[in-house]
Length: 207
Image (cartoon, rainbow, N blue to C red; front, side, top):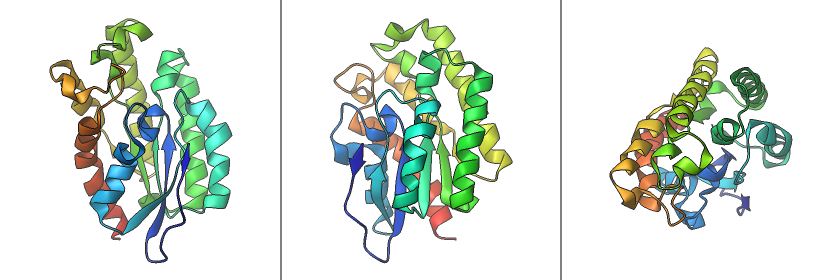
């Protein structure tokens, strides 16, 4: 978890919720995708906290991250969670119930136009991907869980960024997209995610 200095008055307060992909495990803090996103947005949004934690599931996000929002008072929130639910074998119905709770909690704090849900990547194509179960089965499960997040978001008029899954699969043929741990995205890989995320966030914050 990284807490950053308070933003300038003019900037919207942004908090990122998630797991290792949000905090940027195996890359420097300034190369995580939330930090790269803020750099692309050019001062309209400032990251006041990246609450992502390596290994966190949707249960952990509910228990540990959502309560932090009371003090942080964000204007914009992104949420990306699900990979560790897949790894732990959490039933899809349990994940779905957690996602509904998470999104409804966020809607109690923010309008839907200031919330963005982000898909989970396909880690199974990385050199270390097979260490977490059968790659084919895990990839299918990630796709299903992304579908759960997408459905719940769209039902609440919350923007969803699905491209992350397909972008991540490029790492099967391009190892420059994999960080030194053989599992997580490299900074160049996160930049590709921001190519997909930035237009969505930019459109929402301009409304």
